[in-house]
Length: 131
Image (cartoon, rainbow, N blue to C red):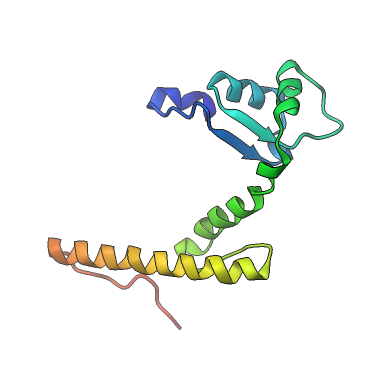
């Protein structure tokens, strides 16, 4: 996927790729360095050290890696429940805080869709059916 980004005109040079140990592999590091993206991937202790893995280990930033759980929670909430207001965060206080923000954002998105549909004269159908 990373190697195809340039084909589609996506330039992520200078960005940080923050990922867990599942992405710890020499080929992933090679691809990231090849498109000038900084890998911030926690490395497995028992994996073979390659040229790119050693380079990535030197630039690993634990304080940035800390935000990986928050980012995964946001995207996980979007992928699960088909965009319903389901929010999975590790800390309860974050569930309340970000759940409120997500619900406001969702309401604005729905309002925008309804206004656009009305302007275009489109029929609005029910999104979800409650039992």
